[in-house]
Image (tube, rainbow, N blue to C red; front, side, top):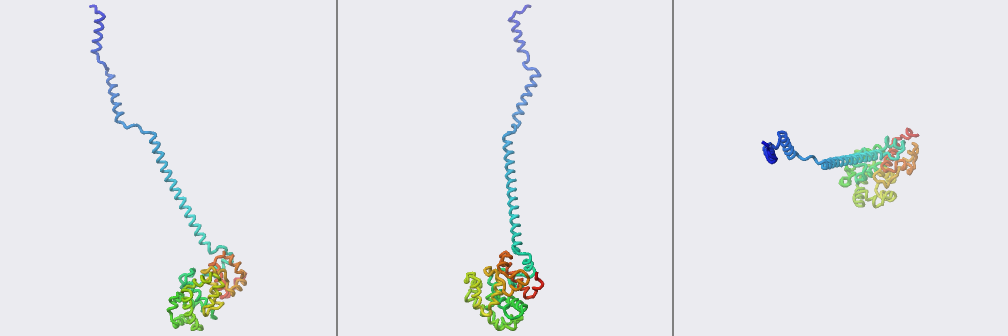
Length: 310
C-alpha cells in the first residue's frame, strides 16, 4: 500500500511521541547535576581572601605592637638599670672624688668620722645630739690630760646619754662627777661637772636646746660661731678649734678647717698646710675634709710623722 505524504508525517509524529525523550545516559547526567547543585547549597562559601588578609594584618599588627611595647619596656628597664648602676657608682666614688693618692691613703689608714667609735647614734648627721656630743668631746679634749683619757671619758659621757640635752639637764652634779671619774677624768671632774650643768642651762635658754640654732643665729659665719662658742664655760680657743675640726663634716660652713696644731703635722708629712689647697684635693667635700683633719690629729697625737714623711 502506498502511503501518502500526510500519512507518513502522522506516522513520524506518533513515533516521536512514543519514543523516550531522555536516554539512560542523560538521566545519569541529570542526577549528577542535581547532586552538584545540592552540594553547592550545602557547602560553605569559599573563604573571603580580603577578610583573611585583613585578619592576618590585624594579628600581625597586634603582635607588632606587643613586640614594640615589650621592647620599649625592656629599653626602659635597661635604661633604669643603667641609671641605678651609675648612681651606685657615683655614691661609691663620691668619698674619693678629687682625692690625690696620698691624701686618700691618709684618710683610709688614719681618718674617720669623729666619735664614730662611740655609742653616738648618728655621727654623720647634724642632729642636736651629734652636735652636743662633739661639743662635749671638744670640752674634754681641750684639758691638759692625755688624749687617751679624754677619749675614754668622752665615750663614758656619751654612754651615760649626756649628749641628749634632756638627760644632761636631769643629771645631778654627783652623777656627772661619777661618770667623769669612770672615764679617768679625775683631775678636773668637779669643775667639769659644774661646767656641764651650766652648758645644759645655756643651750636651753639661748638656743632652745639645739646647737643648730647657734649656727643659724650666726648666719653660718665661722667668725660669729666662734664668738658665740666662747660664751660656754670651760671652752677656750683650743676647744673651739677642736670643735671646728670635728664638726665641719656636719656643719659644712666651718670647712675647710685644720687644727693649727695639726698644720705642722701636715707640713711634716709632705702634704702642705694650706687649707685651700687641701680643700681642693679632697674635692671640696666637707666630710672628706673632716676625715683628713681627723687623720692629721691621729698622726700628731700618736707621733707618727716620721713614718709618713715623703
